[in-house]
Image (cartoon, rainbow, N blue to C red; front, side, top):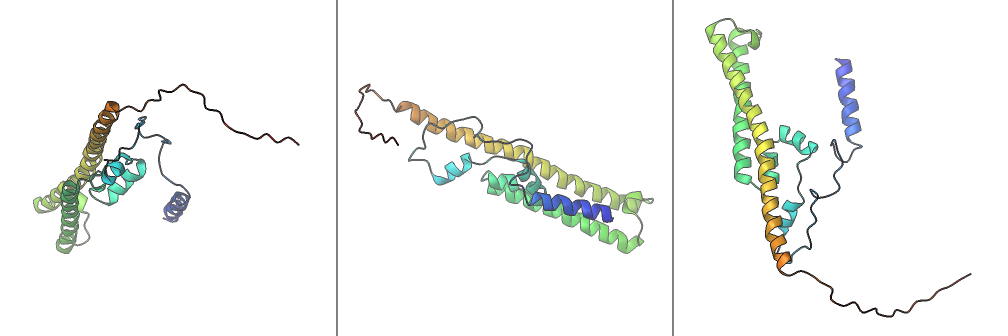
Length: 182
């Protein structure tokens, strides 16, 4: 037990010194350069373009249900995931407490009678619902985020292509400069 506590303390103390937990460094926005930020682009669209799903977000999604959907500005789906996963956690807690109240300190996972098997099956079903909402949040949330980003990029890239910025003058303009030598 002391080794686990020491290891956990070490991991959390090292986490405090890192900016982001990720396997790779990402300096660019998905290898896409936006020609210019349009004056018609809203701040919400600009903020959505800057979002990326990283390892840190995956860890947050394990704690906060619907985190990635909230990040992708899909609040309705995020709240649904929050409610479903919270209900599954509450169900797991009720099943565990009721099982311990009826049968004492028996192990829930080694049930013997059919009534005990019912408790075990309810516990596993609630656990499966909690895990499935987590994976749905990761996979579907990232898909929705990328789809929205591509729609914004397409919308403003087409507008930028209609009015390209060109420099037509090849004239060399004289400039005044001073050269100091010591």
